[in-house]
Amino acid sequence: MLQEVLEHIHNYFLKQPNPGKYTISGGVISPLPTFKEGQRIWVVGSDLNDGVYTYHSDGITDDDDIEAAGLQDETFAGTICALAVPPAVLALSGEIRKWVETYQEDVVNSPFESESFGGYSYTLKGTGTASGGNGGPISWRTIYGKQLERWRRPCL
Image (cartoon, rainbow, N blue to C red; front, side, top):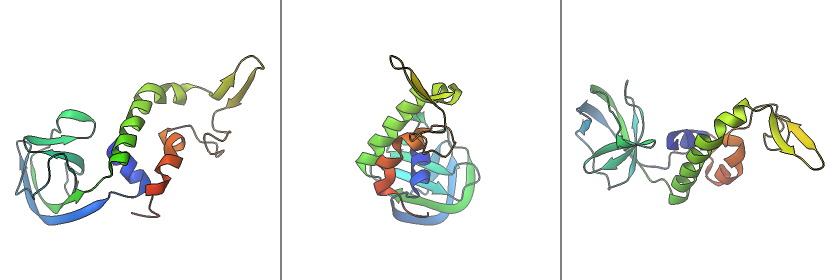
């Protein structure tokens, strides 16, 4: 989910790019540039492993799984970038992931954006303000767009 959020805001919070030739074998990247425990890294230029991961001294994990990221064995010429993702973005990414796990399927399958009983009113999906009035479905991007706006860059 973190990678989707960073792609959406066009901001990876790039700190240090480390271009070179890398080998991934048994889930271990070598030579591995120096990273801090818990730091996010971005693998770019790989055929099998491009993505955002979290560095730990005992292995690399991805954002969506606390287990090993399941890196595929390969040798590639690319870049491994150190990232400095603000804690607020990490927290919001976790909140977005929980929202997606809880509501996304129901929202996508529902024909309604909102319902109200008592005075009985409803708004069809994609026509109201929550979806930006653009006719598109409601997603985490429409729900959390305003909160992510402060970190958004015009282009990557």
